[in-house]
Image (cartoon, rainbow, N blue to C red):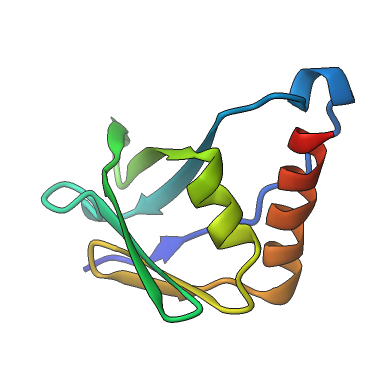
Length: 119
């Protein structure tokens, strides 16, 4: 399988009134690879402090280039599920054959976003 690169998103600065009362959050993953990464399996699994989650199949979008495939997967999470991820001390994610562990600063960004949505 080809190489895949993932980049860290830059934080959004939104006015509090935009975030307050949010009931859904979206997680979007992007892959740029020489081969299909999410063609056959688009399910997202998470392990947050030993609690297992299955967020189902993501909405898939793609663009085919001359030497690469760009794919994105979007998952809709309830505010309750997002909170469980944000409040965890350890979070591991699996999408298809890709496995990753969220870093402390990424979990902090989740907590900050959730906190802003409750203000």
